[in-house]
Image (cartoon, rainbow, N blue to C red):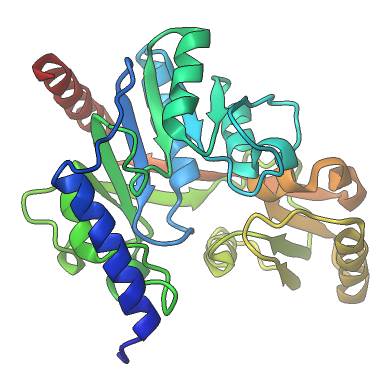
Length: 320
């Protein structure tokens, strides 16, 4: 694998920044409520959003109060905002909007997640904060760090030559490493780490409409081929496909192009993801019949994993 000088520069900057936090020359700020971070070491596609939703559902099942703190990637607004579940992706970001709708809890977006947390605590009081995409956001202290990894991460390179945000050695900062998409623990430096196994798939039975025959599949997500493979594994064989950039905000032209593709391929309708449905906004009905297929994650031995996480948080809070 050829060495890329830009990746070398990027890796040096990341390592220097981490060293400043590790040596406490830069200090993380702490909220009153406990913080559980969900992140990854690569740029998109590991399933952070469905995992936050899964973790939120597990906390709700125990009657625990929590909110979600997110940067709100792709939004046109600035500053700290409380996500309106009936709002637009351009105002809050597609993933925060999806989490607000699915979890029905407060989701707060802000470039500075500490300020977002302070806003949440001023409005709703101290409670658990789920920090979305938080592994590299070291300015906010966290009580438990979860990092998701995929098989691709084990053989990838640092940005910009590859998709890795950090070297694999950064996983030593994590409290739990969640293996997704069939990732194997042997491929990562996980000595002494808690390993969670996560199964990720699609839920065709609960699509918002019945899946149309001979569908066109389209999406704007980080790893669209994975979605296509999951559909085929579920017995859905699309006749055509259209892929857009991750977080793509759909336009009227996009809708016209998709309708023309359906006509050319003699398709019976469309299939897309929940995130794309959020980004379609008011164009959603123009593509009927359209099946919106949720992505679902399952955590092996979830009860024990959550018990361990909550016990560690309580111990750490008691020692601080």
